[in-house]
Image (cartoon, rainbow, N blue to C red):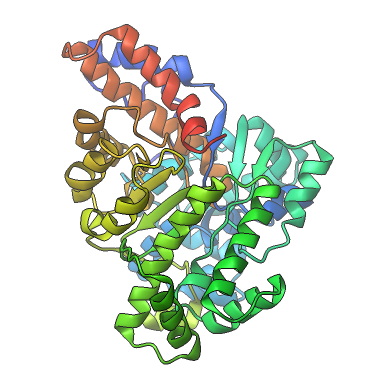
Length: 465
């Protein structure tokens, strides 16, 4: 039966003693460095309200699609996990999870949960069917204490910057309240306009009309663009430094004003065919780059995921319930129109995230190795795991070095996993750098400078912090 991870100081380091010793030395330089998290999905309300987390199941299972997807694959129905508004008992959810804990052996989510159980929740009892009730009670007791409230954890984790992800029409009252109170570290909103840019998004046309009404702009393409620009400025005034775009296909298209206006009219009227709708998405991604050049928001693009792959699951349980699946991507062809116009502009910071590993060495690293505007996004989603991080470093470093990366991005709504994820990245980078030193490819002084930079100064530079 898998055991919870012990506090082994050398976990994730190479087995070779010399390389392991050097990896440990490099890691210890940054082990306690503040966490910079410029892209994530922790709700700002958690920090505003500072309420206790409800129960172990909702904290670690129900809202974590890394976990629910594997449980579902093993035969657990999603309504048995409390998804879709079902009234599942938290203890039953936890029991089902504990019974299947061996399924998570070797997975990144299993590693993070084990880290959270021991290092955050101080639970060292081995997780199993036999200990389900005991571990549930141990965690529940911890959640009842003030030490496990969101604000206390924010401070305990050493978070210096935490970004949320927000709807363009959000009033950002929570961020304003935190800033005025001044008792929590830097919490930034992020402009996420996908549902206002994608004609295939549920409720697209009503949202666009709401956007135009809220900003008092006309129902024209020019008015639509002006409305988005106004809301971006509102976000900047409330501390935002980036705009995030989740697209299935990283494609851009440069249209003149007349063609853009005609396309918008067809889209908003519901008369656009599939080609028109894709053209609109592509043109709007280019327009987002134009706005980022003008207003300074960092542009992050998370591409290559087919959302809601199971239509039946989506209809019953909604989005973000574990059935988003990666697909192949083409950044070189898809982003060329955008880069032809803005790629040489140093005011644009374009951070590219992929779940198609083949594009790291073939496309993203070469793009970032030439265009001053392009940065390599950290391993994301299905790739933010130890072995994938090592493959990522090998794929991009020989072409683009270390300086063209974003720094680690945890991109999570699983609050307790934030320190484990950042620690994983720091250990993986220490291991990679130690190997380069041992192989005579860099010296130890350079490796030390690199690891110091990538945990703090680098993400601050890339995200204009």
